[in-house]
Image (cartoon, rainbow, N blue to C red):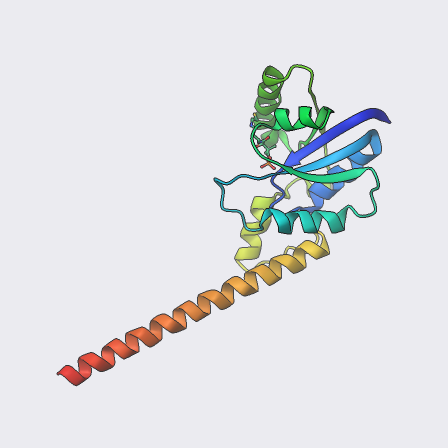
Length: 188
Ligand code: PNS
């Protein structure tokens, strides 16, 4: 086991089985692993940071050397502030490599003492990403096996709520149109 703190930064919107697999692997080789969620005000996420924290809390409850946190701004600055010596990132396929290499080299330029370590999740998760999970779930497709059960449940709750809201909006619009038509009819 490596001495010191490693940080596993990401969006985790939502956490997938690939993320969890990497957290489990990382927790075995680092003394302490801090899973850090980026608070990014520019993006419109599906899950709030609090919801993502809650899900990750449940998923990592049995991993005693895993800590959760959030950060904003430069990742290297946050890493320094918690005395992390290493950044953990996952590489699923060659397609990830270019972006990850660019990010690792930029981070090295910003903070030369912080090393990036890449790990591969299990090959059965090599095609799983948060973006595709959101896309499949939003289109009503199954995400079983791609995300932990707790995340599957939260996705269903979130999408049911969104569907109810949309249904309500459509009903209100139809009612307004009918009212307008009624008034027009009386005028004629
Ligand atoms: O899960 P993601 O979205 O691939 O994670 C990307 C993340 C959060 C690790 C990256 O965007 C990041 O570190 N953002 C913080 C801002 C920063 O430090 N940018 C410079 C990195 S080159």
